[in-house]
View 1: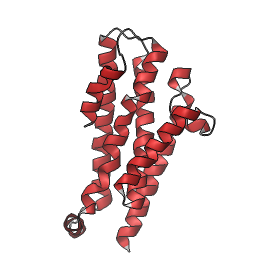
View 2: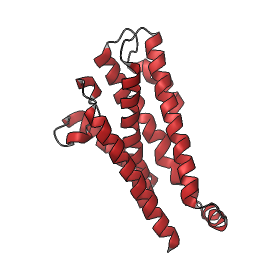
View 3: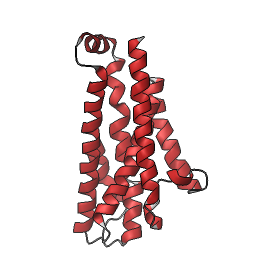
View 4: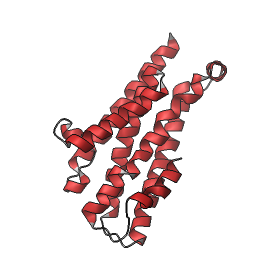
Length: 187
């Protein structure tokens, strides 16, 4: 689904002959949504009681399994963002690729971590999707006014500092979620 999303972005947001700020809009506002698509549903297999019981019977800790799923999802997000940036450059868009790929990944990572944490802590997939989308819309309509350092769309303004905050916030959300899930399993 994330690859399909990347494929349809050019249908509603042009990717030809863009300058750096316009390229940032396409990457941050559209390609970054792949983080929500790929990271939010990672707890879905454990929702099935039979799979959960099978996982508990194995010697491999469930946290390890979750970390492998996370790593695979993050690599996929990075590859999709890189692919989108390469596609845009083939269409004669000009922007600093490494900086924009890294910044877009930070945004996707934070949004995905929000969804991952919301789903992991609530066991409700709908909440897992609603929270990052609500945060995304709040950023889109209010700018950095209420979110401060956690503003998602800073590349278009020429600022990269917010991306470090997004990465750190995403890591904290992941660690918090994995810690809480581990405590719940031990009970």
